[in-house]
Image (cartoon, rainbow, N blue to C red; front, side, top):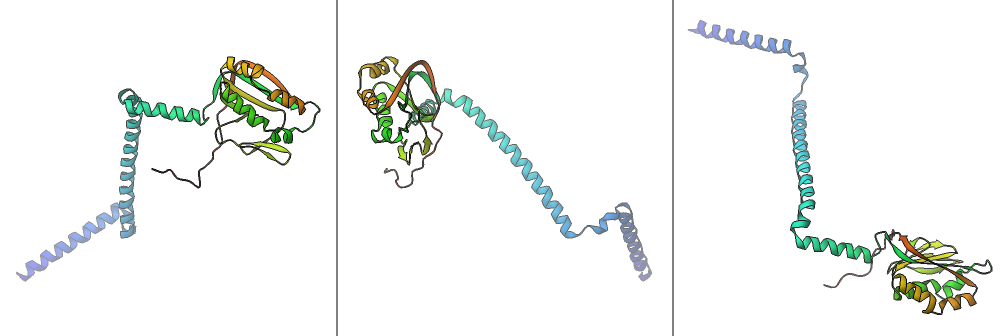
Amino acid sequence: MKEYKWIVMIIFTLTGLSIGLLFSIEDPSAAEVTPEEVVYEQEIEELASINENLRQRIHKVQEDVETLEVDLPAENPALTTLRQEIKTFEMLAGRPDVRGPGVEIILSSSNDENIAMIVDHKKYLVNLVNELRVFGGEAFEINGHRIVDRTEITLAGNHINVNSTPIAPPYEVQSIGNPGELKQYVEYGTFIFEMMEEDGVVAEINFHDEMVIEGFRGEKTFRYFEVVE
């Protein structure tokens, strides 16, 4: 009986050695793989699977967003109203480029002098924009700078700043608005042109059937107040 046990043990031992030898022959690198490397390989495979799942989910979300953007405006009146209100506020803030009929008023010096101090002292640019607004003007620009509610028109040294950017004469004031009212303003509605002429400021006035005024490109942040709810 003891001999039988020894024989069984020898068979199992030889079998184990044979199997180990077989694996070592079939995969020479198997002995070089450490337990840490096996763990890393498993983690890499898991991360690859997670990334693929995330990629598929992102693609699905993008498809859902595109579908909502197409379908919701027609199906959701509240959302349509909100989009219209956003466009209205963007217009009031002077964000988009606009086109339409209007007037161009170019201010220059009659004697080739720097008229910045005169124009600032008499507030000719500010008054022109305000009066044009009263007489049908809807969008305004000075030397390529869109005029909005928070625009600054100030004297800085020997030049004028608009939206914190220096401009030089001639000062070109453009306004898009009601053509009839704008013509009435220029021809009958104000004494500002007579005052400018007395100060040596020449005003060249041109009316256009179509003008383009670019949107406000600056950004002013609110730092010191908060909305009261």
